Length: 284
Image 1 (tube, rainbow, N blue to C red):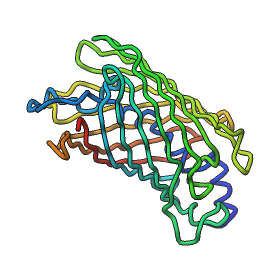
Image 2: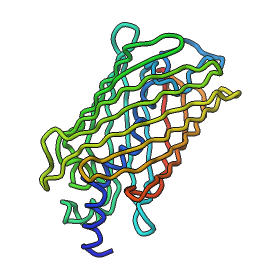
Image 3: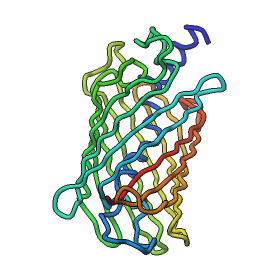
């Protein structure tokens, strides 16, 4: 792939590939951070929240890696370490910190401020505030604000400016035990653009659904979304399906592994498909 092709793909992807692909599973980070309150000596698996209820918060730590297939000639990766700490009355508020690592051939290209031969680099560290402001037996609602710090070591690994993301969702706890929680997400630049004059302004409508499985050790989630980039007038869709399994007690909490394949739709999509794998410890 020559320089012209790289520049064309870079511009077509928006501000940069790494942050745009990071936002494809827009609510994944939020839903991974919002799970059940700490449990005392839980032995019954049915009593251990498996991480799919977005209205109940707990202390959590995890590691995950997402592989993104951009096209037949190019792929990128995103590594993330995250930690969540609830606080306040009833533990209905929380802070979350995420440290990303961008794994992309763009990071090794001097055109984007990269160093030849160095494809893995630090991305934009973010801090998220989560507030569950309404919760009953049948419904729940929350909003979040995530601040992206301008810490990326290359232009392609981050937004190139401070950026923010607000989200709000409303959850229905259905009679059959399933959860349906649609969300609205807005991602925006805070400095009016990066050094190349490219700004961030993206809206995502997300539809999160969790069926009730008979075996409480396992879970599935379905996460279709519609994304519109106002800066490039690009619209595309995505679908991610998460399959997770509780692995038992670990580090004073409940261990869990998961895999999350995804596919993108539409002519404006910045990639073709992705798959994420991870491990996290909850309720410690």
